[in-house]
Length: 98
Length: 363
Image 1 (cartoon, rainbow over the protein chains, first blue to last red):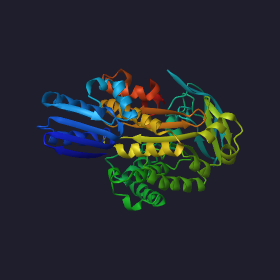
Image 2: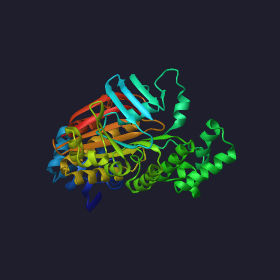
Image 3: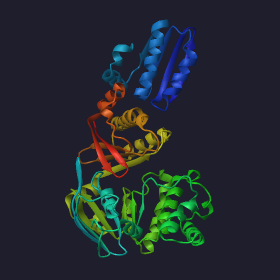
């Protein structure tokens, strides 16, 4: 998985490419731990995300919890495969999907 | 050499062998093929009495080995067994692993056992590893040591239970080459395998197992090129099988997923179904089952693709205490696995090392 990060003031945009699963979720978690401090707007771009497992969902959920306290988090460009996962797990009610 | 009549093996929730009748001649090299769960391993485990048959008789060289009075140790001395998970003693080096049984059971002197052991290591190409420990060897090397150890007991028959299925694909060839050499020496062998090319090349007879018995018994040419019966033909032509065994929580997850993806692509499975196979494995095995496993364990995954029905079935077997992942409180993982499958069934099983079986039919 590739994590492409763009910081613009207190805005952080993270584009994920590939698979967010048991093997790669810890990398995203570490990346977020490092950069989420002070961020008021967090945007995930999932245009190139191919696969998402529970391990990845857990990282997204903890990011959402942090952003609930310090600003806003949105997820954009969600493809059909990933959307199905958000729907069956109820994550579409928790996340703000654009 | 071996005569089996009306062999039946029944477990509480499955009957892999209903009525097996067959004769095996001295020098036969038999490949045993067939879909998962058709009793291939159970058959060879009954032959060396690692499993007790429910009913029926097995005769080896005129002795009835299913008789209660039969001396099982004597039976097993005639029959070597090579397992998919090597089963070497990790606290002993290679040559000690090979010397132990001949000294204990054949009462060989230490020097004799050593000399014979070294000779065997040379035949499997590993004389230079005699003083290494199993942990220092690759999977392929471990399996070659396990074969040498089996040969050290000078068996008349060798039973192989999926000898290459726990190996990295790059190591399958070296183990198959050693087994082929043994076949050429005239040893009687029975080999359970999913590797169809190997099954065809090595054997003079092939058993296709299905419906609780040996459904078709023939030469490799007959079974692979001109099967006489419908299910054999369907299996040979349609079924594509992936198999992998995991023995550590630190297994190569990325490598596993890559092989599963390659299998899917080769078989013409849709990308969506490939993700679903991966999801079932990741959520059930990695997220739910593995955290529950303690100590040494074996987890075996097979995926079968049937072109005819365009359906994929994933079976996951694991050792250790009975644990039904469908009762896990990891709701998130369960939800994702259920979303990827039309049905997921769990059952306790008693299939050699494996005590738990999950069968998922992929959407």
